[in-house]
Image (cartoon, rainbow, N blue to C red; front, side, top):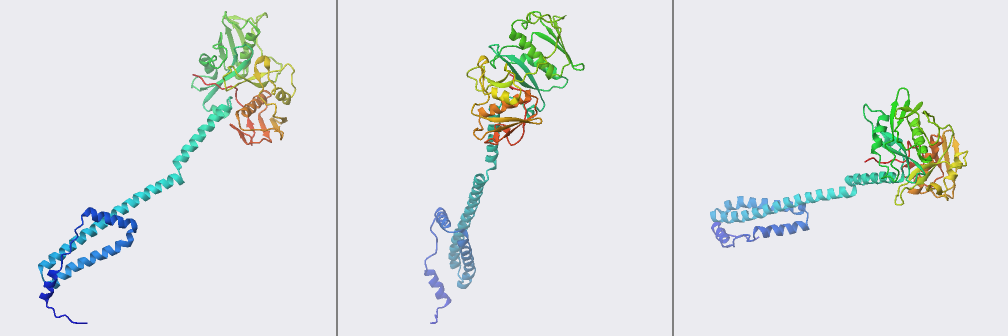
Length: 415
């Protein structure tokens, strides 16, 4: 290697003749260039070289002034190092911004991913909507009162005449239990809240009578008003008899005393005055039919009807329920194309559908199931079991289990 004989002064002069190293770019331009590079490469690819370059520059700043022994050279190199340091700082700040942005993007992406892949809130909302839909569907499909609906409520059932004075409809309402009030107290108070006309029925309540109930002795005194209407017409007589029969069973009565304005006895039709009421001992097993008080009503009422031909078995009653009762505007509750055999197993009615019967989860089938349950209740059975059905559930009814019988028919809401 050829040896240079330059003195220190010669080297100093040569260095002075070199152009000054200075970055003329603005900070924004530097930042934009750095950002573009970061978008192309990961931070790790340039972070270490940048740090190494900054360290090298810092080392030159320290060593070269001593070698040159000149203040001017030190200032020039200091200027270079400051510009390089500014470049390094801008680069590091950009890296920090990118890292922060990446963390935010990652967080947002994770949130979006969580919301998309495991949307707990969406699931909860979906489940709630599905539950509400199911409850609404059950309410549309069924009309009776069931055990699980009672909770802290009392069920009250009222016989009501239809507007044509042909059918007596048993309508049930639920009212909250109140401390210090018996079921009979609630029964009397609720009479004035019934909206019979809204339900398409006759205005029958409150009754034209005062009712006095003795819970300990299980007795009821019915004191009719002098101008009561129950003595006129067979329908009215049937109505008050149905009311008294219903009270007898609902309150487990042992005696009903009849009076008119405080005097013993009540006149019904052309018969002798009656001083007490005794339920009819004749056993009649009605089947339940569908009754639409108004043609626009979508939800039917279930009405019991006893045919003149007294059936001997529940299967015979079910067979009658496939036919309309035109004289009373009652519609069949069992479709003609549904064929089944009804047998009794202890206290359970077993309904076995034929293979040709198409059983679907719809409103018509749910009405049929409810009519079967209400009819089985009239026969004093405790359960109904369905076999060989095409579906496992129909509305609220789980056909894979024995079906509980309703508490009371035709549930209606009070205002």
